[in-house]
Image 1 (tube, one colour):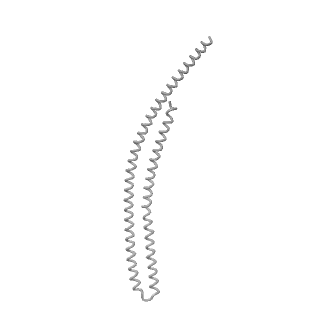
Image 2: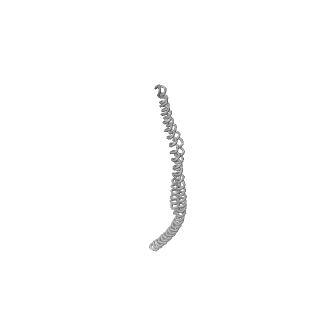
Image 3: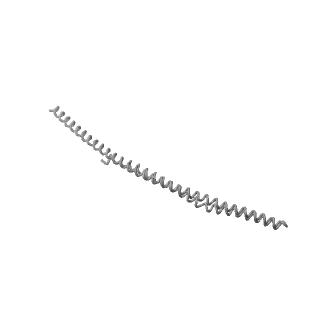
Length: 183
């Protein structure tokens, strides 16, 4: 009987394997996106630090320029110091806002990533439940299909037996007829 049911069973096993592979691929894509989010958030500190160093370098360049002006132009020292104070105040304001902006961005990104993780966790849980139900229904359908194929195979074998019996009877009748014709 397995000659009839093996192809059916194999087809169902392949379908279930495809369902399970698709489920794993979906879960891996969600995990990949979580890793990307974490990496991006983790890189914010480096970005902030690099930008802060750039701003501080610009401030140092302005200081160097003012020092050069102060040392080469007589009588401008008080004016240069006023300019230096104004420049430092502006750079302090810029750096403070810069740090605050990065804190806000990081906070929003972390919150968004946490929301994404919760939502995708719920989606994965719901998908797992649906896949479990699908696989269970699929296994039931397989059982029913195997039973139907088994019954069909038994009927086919019964029909073959009947055909062989009829062929044997026809052969016997032909032999009897041939014997009768000879006699």
